[in-house]
Image (cartoon, rainbow, N blue to C red; front, side, top):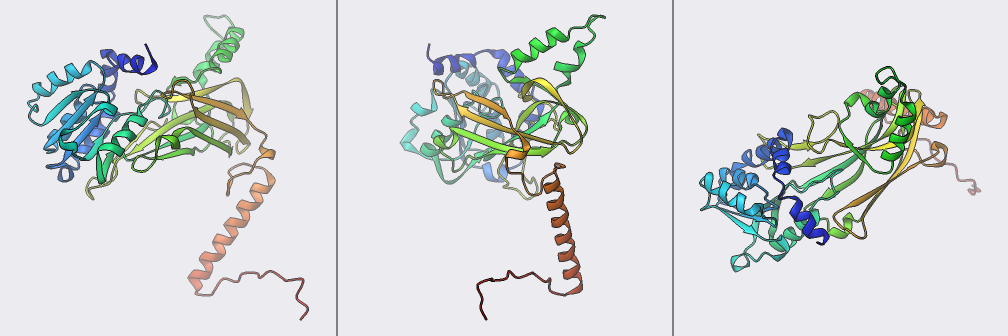
Length: 367
């Protein structure tokens, strides 16, 4: 069985779909993004890539779509057909049991919108975004809409108290040796778990932004970031947290932009967060610089998977953002200068007096 067959067969496990259907933030985000835009969906032709149980296709039909092509490569397509019939949308929704790459629509028609729930852990891992982009290229009308239309991956330092703090006393027995070995093993593979917002140890930064209306599969092969951030409090730096947000089209002034977030500060989803666990924790003071590099690369053997590589860096060796939240002297001085400049600009604007800018002196001027 090749990687694709294994991937599609895995989605025949009903427990996976039970998990996704029970994921309230996930399902409600799609429901709001679709039903909140009934004016757009009315009489439109839609494609649902990887329809699973067909619930997103049914949302589209409820929103007034005149035709929905629900594409599903796994044998779950048979259940989707029955669910469509159960909801009396068989005249609107056509379930096609096929990989989207092999689909041929009648008269090679184009669709007005593509909906898909393609996201995997840390957005891209074991996802199906390549197939969604293929569908966009082959089937979407010019100026058609993508649901979602963009996505962002965020990273931030964090503590992971569940892997560190409880092992000093286990039924009255110290298990610190076991805990150390446990963390070493987990540092070889990302941990999928939920952390709380107060376990985030520094401000997040966007590692990757994906435009589903324009990006090509080759644009998704590799992402990397080098970053320095000041710790937001005194505490234990124990890992790096990765999460994502998906943005839906803003087609209604009443609805606004619907966002599906998997951040620690948002309601828990089945994606949880992805944690890269440090084998040893570091005590950090508030504003102390935390420097790291994170690489996300497509697996050369299985394009549906991505490998994460984390490197701890010396804050003195890399460029800091402007402004930087750390307490290194140069960053404090830069922040002070920027604040003074901003204050001067505000005072100048309030008084109507032009702000004076120091001109550079040309040493070669003989006049």
